[in-house]
Structures are given as structure tokens and as C-alpha cells.
Image (cartoon, rainbow, N blue to C red; front, side):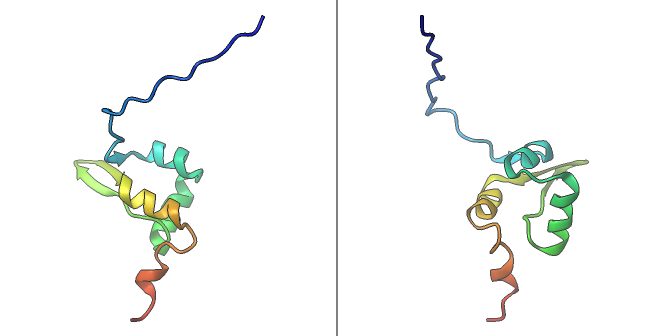
Length: 81
């Protein structure tokens, strides 16, 4: 007897989050906390946005830009015009 696992149907009305916390960023990018912050200091990873108090998160658009070109991220901004 075969059992079929069904995946949940996508919900088009549910939008992706606008911001991701550090735990999610580490999972999405497969980087450690220290690597994330080292690359931010080097300009090779997007910096977090301060949400207020001690809370900060990464904008999904910034993360997507890094995911699209992780090796080229930040290089375009540092090249002379």
C-alpha cells in the first residue's frame, strides 16, 4: 500500500514577510551569525534595518539582491564611476 504525502496548497493571499530576523537570515543564507556580521562590515552583505528599541531585521528586497548575486553584492557600489 502506497501512501502519498500531499503538500499544502499555496495561499496567494499570503504575502512574504517584509523583514526577516537574524534567525531566518541565517537559515535562508546558510551563514553563521559571525559570518553575517563580518560580511556586513566588509560591505558584502546587506545591513539590517533598525525597527525600534533593540529590534532589527533585514528587508526582503535587500536579501533577494544578495541571493541573486552573492559574489557581486556590494562591488557595484564600490566601483568608481
